[in-house]
Image: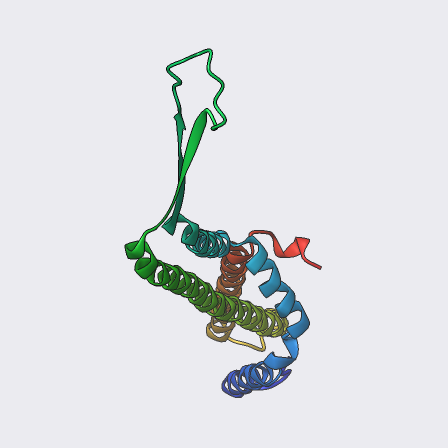
Length: 230
């Protein structure tokens, strides 16, 4: 790359090349986003994430509470009876009356009648609160999945740019090395390009590490490896 070109111009050209590549990566970042795949990730996260199940359990418990509050209306009524056998003093006598009697009673708890509507209303409010909590968590979780997915896409794009830049520096280093061996380049210039190549190699390793960290962060929400998701 940049044959027979003074080092200062070569370095300037290389800098402009990196800037152009970075700008292109930013412009094309949206092209790397697969929204259908992102929707699948969100669905998987909602199916696997433990807190989703916890919020759903709260809703189920609140629904049971509403049912119990409605059924408790029957508690305000009370039915009872009393069995009262009659004793005949003359066992040989024949009585036309019944030898026993029943007494029935039907009671209504007025205080309970006044309390039940408030209890049902409270149970419904607790159910609505549980549903709102889950809806809020769902939205936050969806936003977090998108954020981590977009971060992963960005890190991959940066890694791709740095990988291409590293290949260009390798090519430049090979060219300068040959010129140095032929006596057409100074040791100082050769060392400068060598240092540049080392820096790019280190940056490439850092980018690879950032990709792995972003991938692991996304998989934490999904509960499974990205490689298992098609």
